[in-house]
Length: 362
Image 1: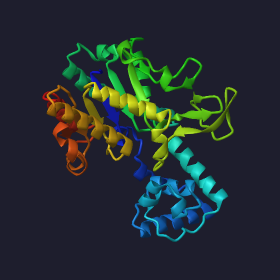
Image 2: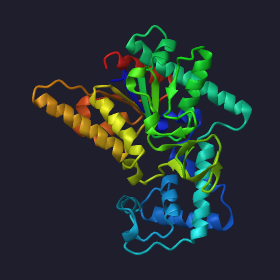
Image 3: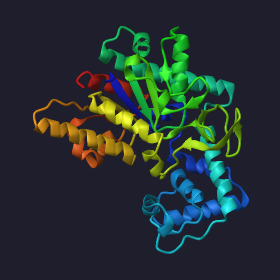
Image 4: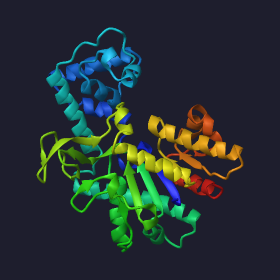
């Protein structure tokens, strides 16, 4: 059992100039020229006419599936895109692949640290300032004597659906600034640079653990194993002798990989920690991820059932999101009795003040 389970969504990275998926579409469109731009606008118009918000997620779904025949599509994709029974105009495979690769590279660059040294320094300072304040608030609830001790004791399991590495950079800097080699963030990476759920240390080893539920901009499936690399790679590239097969990232509306190895292992670990009674703090997440939602419902059902038969069980969840009350009302009705809301943006002075007050009675 961990002192806290933390789940981070896009709203937790937005203060660091990492845009959310819906915010990226207009910026990306400006980078396209000629036939690519024309096809992009054509698809965008088809989706909009069908009643679908043509954000980067929807556009990536189309260009990753250029032969959009409804009865051949994953049901979830077909339902989301609201396609008619008629075939969508076939997109040239090569053209679609080029646009798909450009979208992925754009996401990689957008989710990475700023390239300009001054902008990167400013970004890292913001990351440190905001996460320092966030963890200090958690520390006041736990009663540790300092932020350094909180981070050194390794009492946190952190899950995120974000691709970026803001949190990893925060821990790296905190280890240096607080002068403590005991501040660790276990990412499940071996000394040889391979990633696997098997490489995570157990919860009783006093190490903070980070689980990237949808993958990371720095992880790649290779013909040997999953590699961690700070460079951008495409299919066929080599990472220290291993051939890249694809990026280890779950792209929008690809539900199936979530339930397959290695992603399924991370979701399983999260469920087990919640079943053990670890309180869950959700920051900047919409909870529209079906796999996450299924976990919350299953744990809540188990807690309710134990309560009915007189057994003791715990489940607490705090949701920090500007739309927290709306999400609770519209999506979390089956578990609303377990949910406390903080309807504020992460990283703001007002949001942190409210979080601090609400945590006192959480």
